[in-house]
Image: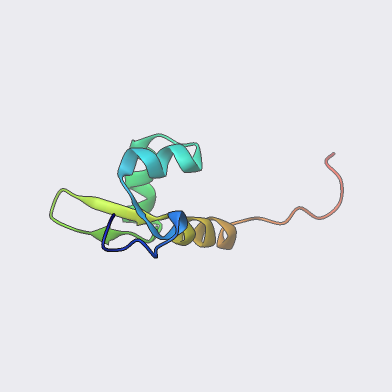
Length: 72
């Protein structure tokens, strides 16, 4: 049993591939969003980056563009 057994799945840290899969994008796009658009992440070491699912979903929702009216 893990020390953090009380953590829910949404609190666990995702690696780059899992985070990219969750968002339906390529890891390269994830890296660009992290560096250029402020995608929240944890910098564990110089090369190891992790993401929390709840942070990704909150960030994604904050970038949603509401469409008003119907498509033309």
